[in-house]
Image 1 (cartoon, rainbow, N blue to C red):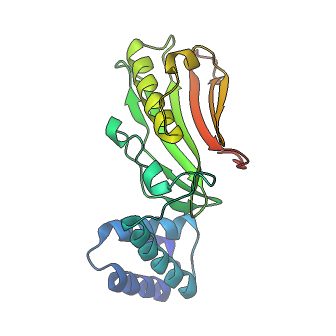
Image 2 (cartoon, one colour):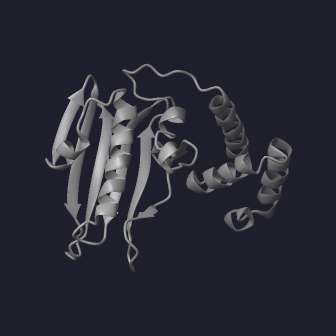
Length: 219
């Protein structure tokens, strides 16, 4: 909690009182703010004030998100929900370390077992637009089960369709050509596979859609 984070008792009390005044009964905003305090290592009164205002501003923008020109990427507030219809929810789009991000939890898929396969959805970008969308699947049980394969195919098909704005592609054909990359307008779609370092037969599958020219660093 915050009390452990702040070494200064006076600063902790200041932050607590200000947060109660700002957010009142909005627990979602309060949780976002506490997370941001930890991530961005805020330990000054000025930083606390700025972080409180930022959370309020982000929630206001979320309630009426601006349109994003296709050449810049996707609206993060729309892109974060591309897979909601398939049961994949993400957290809010927020600044974390050196980028803006929204992501889901790891979701277990496939057959029951000690280490089940899993999948997660991420988006990265700047304050105004999402630049990179990523579906990441960890296949712990090789060969991949039909159940996991079908789930990943459905999610990938939905994501690519929403990201490109059309469904003029064959997802099974793309998966049969891994590694594969296609381009539509200013958007690249790539599907890659990387074996686990443990050499236990497991591997990671990634479906990435990103804007041309985006410097994705290590994401």
